[in-house]
Length: 343
Picture 1 (tube, rainbow, N blue to C red):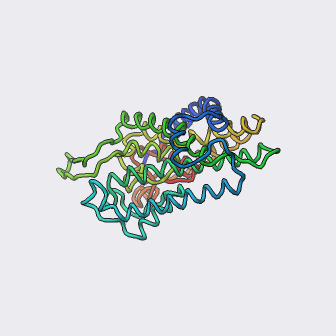
Picture 2 (picture 1 turned 30 degrees about the vertical axis):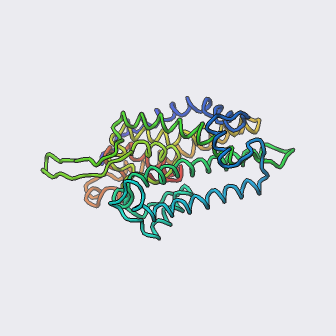
Picture 3 (picture 1 turned 180 degrees about the horizontal axis):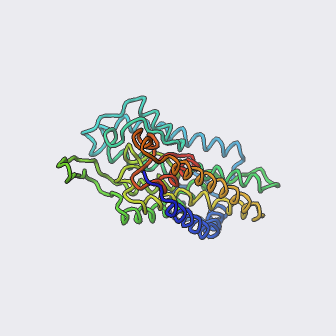
């Protein structure tokens, strides 16, 4: 695998410039989402269906119980529907998921861990992918964000024991942040060649004459929130190493940008909510140094692992992308590890 130092530096610089450009405007927008008082029509409908009083804030024990109850119900729902997969509309060809696999999947997706102990393309169908796994990619990411926001409120508020309302924060994060951003990201991914359909795809290798059928599906829409929410659960077993999820070096770089987008903006949100922007810049600076250091060290390690013996031994080993060369692979590996997921 060839490592191009110039390409590495250009891509890192492009990411720094792009993330710096959206740091303040996105940070301001996120602060406005969590400090605002008005509710949109979808949010009001959600509150009505959930029986939530949007004007009431919660103490930390109540906020915590809301998080735990929501997560517990989500685990049971994801587990139950996986087990009943064969009964779902359009799913007669796939049986219910094994109980232990279903429980592992439910817990990992609800906790934003997204550990896949199965091959998604042969174990779960389009309905489960869309209505369970993709939805949980939204909800688990939203829960992670609102818990961080509750922590910020706890640091910022000195005259009240109220941390906000979990259900309001969840609705606002989902409807105002993740859904619109994921929609735009999915469109970009489709333009970049990521699969978005509801049918299997025939793939033929003209060099060998071998043809195979690979399951298709709404991959781009799930990939967008998988990356944006720093989730690990992809549509295919190979995740972002699969050409249907990540077809080119440019798409790979865009996915790294999505990985870092919300985490890089939250420090500005923090500074704005606590009333001291210098603290936000300090946090952002530390995060930036850690990312640059980690990415540089990973790039150095990849560049150093060149040669005949390394290639004969399988390159850098299992789990390291090699289709696009060493530079984008090092950037992706460092960024996805720092955002705590391995998509």
